[in-house]
Length: 390
Image 1: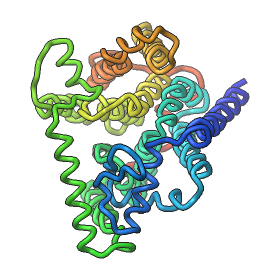
Image 2: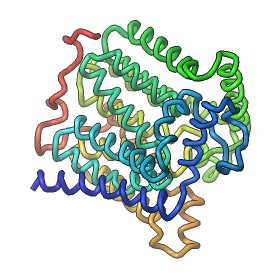
Image 3: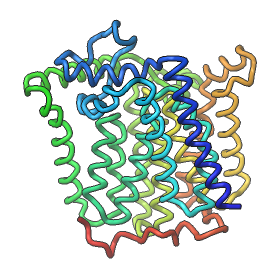
Image 4: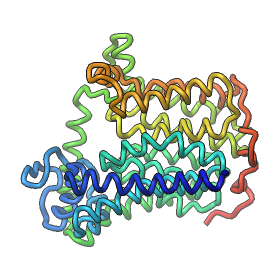
């Protein structure tokens, strides 16, 4: 039964990548994917990546010059085959990472909970599935003592979207933190300079200057996205700057690390911190949007699948699935659907889950692993302390 469920879920993920390709690459032409492809073309053509290119797409490119270069292989392929590869990459890397992270039945449960949100993210043809998978794989690399691989994965992720750089906190659990800091710095410099293989230095400086301009312009707008800052504004009417809320959220995220250092050697504790980090990266990001919630829902799904069910966890998981169905699948009248979007209903189960995760990490609420199969604390990845970093 477990093998059948695993194979069926893999088939569903594969079929969904094909479905998205037909929907967004044959019957339609995804603008987000046009933006990515055009960025690679514009970099090679020595054009400003961050200027308006209405002849190619609407909206603006907001990723790094390095991502534009790395996307070049998908820019030279025909649109539909390139989109199929991109969709498979976003779907199967998540599937693979979750499979490696959890025992079999727990992984199947997590992937089932996550499926709808991953499909929704794939339909936007964005990079959120890839961003999620790279964080999970970086966690696994650190668990295996492979610091160089972890640094490369985090670095690549940060050059897709900046906020995954928060995954460096996962290295705090492991020995030789100074070495990891040097590795991440070296990877960052190398990736930042990578476009020099196709453009001269003065052009790369100009590209980074344009990127900085468009990012600072975005940051100066009072855009709260689907974040905690948005909830505070809607529920309490407060109009604070983003940074105090983000700073407070960061302190809350890191509090269990400071107060429960003796538990750092427990893999279950480290896994639950990973889940909390995934949710935090979206909830406290003022530019978060519906499609980026696949990152947070991955944290929620992993946490629920690894934990012994209880009424609170069951209610949060059920609310999460209901929010995905009601807000992302148009099963309600348009007015009700718009109201759910206006109140950012999709993020509320993630906020509830994050609060519970933090109370469990702090030891204020009991946590135990899900009973069937190998327990999380006895999973196949050994504690890193006895392993030599390389």
